[in-house]
Amino acid sequence: MDKRRSDEAAVQAMQLLEGMIVCPSFSREETNVADFIEDFMRAVQLNPQRLGNNLWCLSDVMKSERPTLLLNAHLDTVKPTAGWTHDPFTPTYEDDRLYGLGSNDCGGGLVSLLQTFILLHWDESLPYNLVFLASAEEEVSGKGGIESVLPLLPKIDVAIVGEPTGMQPAIAEKGLMVLDITAHGQAGHAARNEGVNAIYEALVDIEWFRSHRFENISPLLGEVKMTVTMIQAGTQHNVVPAECRFTVDVRSNECYSNNELLDEIVKNVRSEVVARSTRLNSSGIDVQHPLVQVAMAMGKKPFGSPTLSDQALMPFPSFKMGPGDSARSHTADEYICRHEVEAAIRDYCYIISNALVG
Image (cartoon, rainbow, N blue to C red; front, side, top):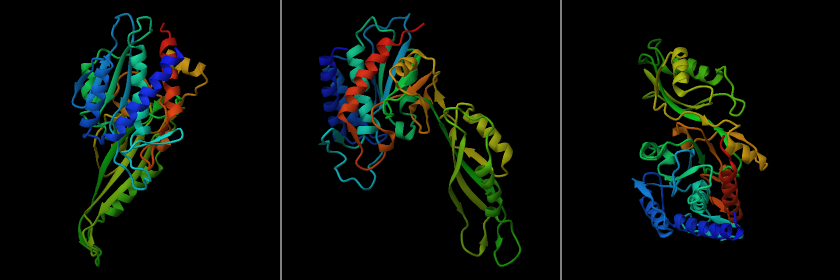
């Protein structure tokens, strides 16, 4: 990649990111930032398509003999947490750092992948067709996000998701399933030996969730993790509760589908179990995939990620790799470094151009 073009792309990426920070883009409220990005894409002679607040664009030439690579990042953000010392909607530089809500998660990845697409989408010698997608509702795993767009795209063979990973390839990602559990008892007066206390019934199952270990352990993601996170019971101090409700957060590895985990859970607990959704499964890619192999040849180290992304909704191989640090996400004074974006554009272009297929 020509250094002058790469440097110009990095400058443009940072300018675009500054504009994104100015536009509040909470999940399901991304219209203004989607309008802004669409206007930018048209200004640089791209031809984006749009569904809701999702934007995508295809390579100038889509060759049937080439596999298709999706470049994806999300344009929505969480709401700013307490503790910001900068205005979260005013892009502020301090030396190399750009502060602003969404700068790290996932604005830095989005502008880096978009500039990579701009630099490469016309190149007929690439080993891949390229599709760029800026998706909405990622932070809430909303059905109006990437899930609504995938049926409209050409067949995708592999994806790079621009989540902040320090530009190391996260080749496996834990899935998520949230369970609402209800233990049933029988009401009675607390002063007498009557009723069946639903809290005590729940305790047996809560202990199972705390201590149970699923047999299959992933070399990258480790064990399936189950955590009881909320509990509610009782109406007043002198009434034996007839119901106890609690919530369980389940983080799956690639050894199990969420439906398989749900089946085993239902067989082992006495309480009523309802899954809010089973669609957010663990995802990943083979370490031997050419894109991963080129990244490793550059000295990058594959790892497993405990955090969820739009990968969970992708029915094809995918991995996360983007500028920034996941530890900065959803925190006060979130930032991205200029040099991280510059390096990301160079690395993306090199990896895509050199990942020979077959």
